[in-house]
Image (cartoon, rainbow, N blue to C red; front, side):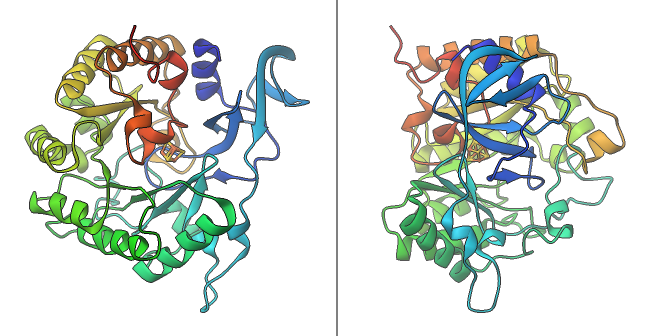
Length: 357
Ligand code: SF4
């Protein structure tokens, strides 16, 4: 797959009328349709104004064949089920890409006041739209995971959470949910995603519950960008992130820890690459993703933010991909999670998962 086309389509999106598996809002950057580009899972913005269209399973740019195949991920069968008390399984967990089950265990965030909220985040919008429930119980999540495994063959699971007011920042409920899923599916790899917990013991607790990868997502390494885009989360000192990453690498292992880095928050691309290399050197996978201006977020609705320059996205993605390769750090080696899935990043199409020569 052409890496520059993959980057460009990740930014410009696809004019696709029918994406049976899509996420319109939710935690962090979202609003995408799940497709297979040349057979590889990709989460691509659905954009009615995109120059990319699909015809006969081919990706077209301004009507011309790009040579890339496109296939929409089919609607999973577990979406048609509901719990005994009438909650649709689709409101409890969603299919991401073709084989990842993802859930936000608590769909509210203590930082959602306008003055605190991450400006690219829409975690409570899917709740307001009635597309999900505020708190998923461990039993509900386990029930849905079992069905998704049996009916649709999911191979891994991602659990994220809105941040709570407690010292654990939401990780305790995450651990309960992991434990419940592992009781019914002992071999299903699970990644958890949370802020650095105030008490680092929580990281061990998540591992002991059965999680095998962890994402502690800083989004940007640049202090000015952190405070401008994430006034609440950006007030957590970088030292706390570094301590949490180091503890997570100790507990989960080298390359079982990851963090999102969003290109397009104003961070200097060269600085971002340098920071990503430092993360790699400490055993943390930097998952590089372009910032997406989504309806329902403050970035789009208030700030009028626009998508990043594809050249910056390509440059950072290609250089981080080369650094990952040089260090032998493969997303596919993560037990579960976004680095293992790869659909939201173009790192894979830049060759990040190819063995270094
Ligand atoms: S990379 Fe992460 S957020 Fe994106 S589709 Fe895969 S599991 Fe979901």
